[in-house]
Image (cartoon, rainbow, N blue to C red; front, side, top):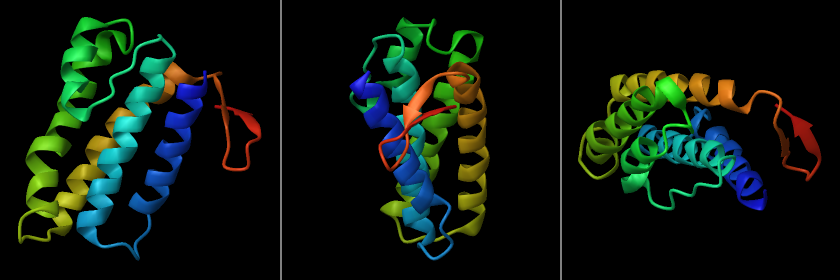
Length: 134
């Protein structure tokens, strides 16, 4: 499960940046996007499925409903809203918007809540390489 552990490590790394108020709003939104992607990838890895590219999240989740079950659509819709509606304007455009950050946080929390149901009882390596149970 090296892939699972790698994705969980990246998830925690990006989440730490996303939650850091010292980081700019556009970079925090980007970090939430990356954290969400790696969290989705971690859950997929438990099913021996690898998404590999953020543009493929919807397609892979639709092809593999066993990953998130009845919550699949909610996961990919929340992820795509961050990816296609919020992130481009904040990261590439000229606008910096605290409301966009709030919406991103809300969408990320939805993804995390669903993913945590699938990860309950699964172990993962922490930052120091120690195996912990989620």
